[in-house]
Image (tube, rainbow, N blue to C red; front, top):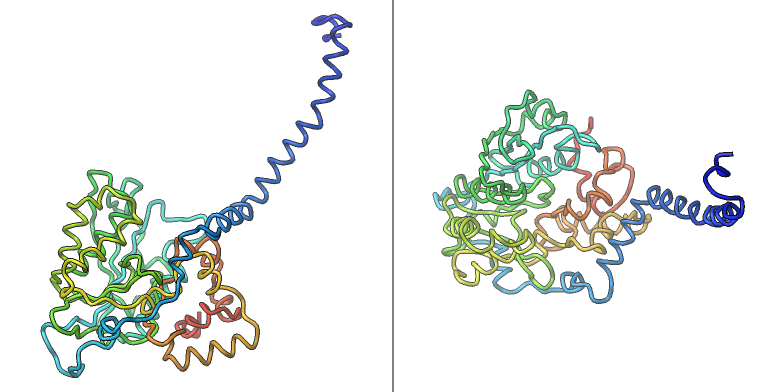
Length: 374
């Protein structure tokens, strides 16, 4: 009745036919939207896979084979002096971690400072046998300023497990210029190492073998870094070794604060220490990519670390890890787990049960760091 009041019968019939014809199209669009929403994670992963592995991807240069140079090997083996002799110029055997708690403290996929971070700290205790482990932390609002939270880090179950083996060091942050969280963390890493000296590890970096040789840098070197990528594209700050008041770390920090890198993307920051090392080769001892950052962050390398192994491959890599003193390869001291590239694909799924039960190269590396009652 309403239709007859609005349009004439002659015009109503074409309108109805047009409406009926549009029903399949609307239904198809609706179904596509629902399917896209349902399969969003898989679709996103496929797009990322295609983007990162196409034939012209720069990742192939990152993955290219490499051979350590004589200088890199000399850096790996350190000076010839005995580690039993105390020297004020040695690097202190103290390990520093940094963790930024972000308000709100709850996360959709569990708590901040998680099982993987716990394993990283445990790796430092077991592999490095340091005089002290310090977890530096700050609790920041979304604006990047410190907040007075009602929760203390020891309310976190993983930190509570580590409490007897670590010293918690709180930092208060003021961020009047709205610097990014990534930049705040970079600045804090360098400042902590400059002020204290020692070994800095990201909370997704795993010490696999002792760093004893790195604590006695030969000659005028007062810092040790590792190259990233088989093409030695840059140098990462996820694993660093330095004397207190290191001139190299100081120059790096000054350039990072005042130089043009502060206006560039975070990916460009890995180029800065490489450029500084070229200007002052006597200040930095550079390790080959295999020491800290191999395998790399590329799609294929991350997948290789986390793919499930058959019985034969498991036995092979268990033998290799034993032969290399806890590492996958000869000359490897640490493994950076590349959280930004691996978290959504693998790391967030890890639990004590998964690490114990599932045989992957990553799980074989870190399994020994778990306490028995975890």
